[in-house]
Image (cartoon, rainbow, N blue to C red; front, side, top):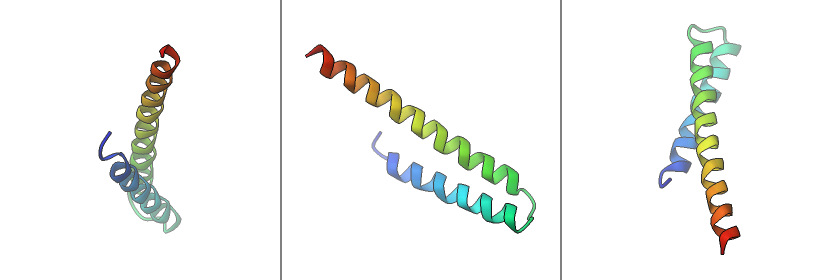
Length: 61
């Protein structure tokens, strides 16, 4: 993915914002935190899938 670092960075920012909101007991802190966790999880799973494909390609050579 070309913009993987950008999306991952946005996920980290959303996650940190959710943590701060939860600590401050602000509304929607749980939802913001959950969105950050899901975004980071999706990016990590795509990255793992990409790495597995690359390992298969190298093993076939």
